[in-house]
Length: 99
Image 1 (cartoon, rainbow, N blue to C red):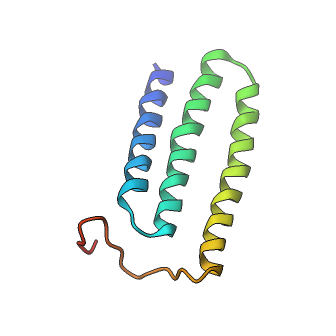
Image 2: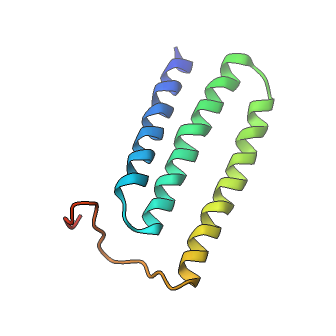
C-alpha cells in the first residue's frame, strides 16, 4: 500500500513540475520546476522501487540523482546569472498576470 501511495505522489510531483516548466517564463523558476520533477517525481519513484524490491541499487541511484540534480540546477542557474539574466521580484506566467 505504501508503494502505491509513493507512486501516486511521485506522479503528482512529476506532473506539477512539468506544468511548471511549461508555464513559467523565467529561467530560475524553470530550474526550480525541474528540481521538483527530479526530487519529487524521480526520487520518490526510486524509493518506492527500493521498498518493493528490497534492492539497495535504487538507493545508490537516489544518492546519484541527489548529487547530480543539485549540481546541474546550480550550474544552470549560475550560467543564467553570469550571462546577465536577473531574477525578478514578481513573475508572470504565460498570459501576463502577476502572481
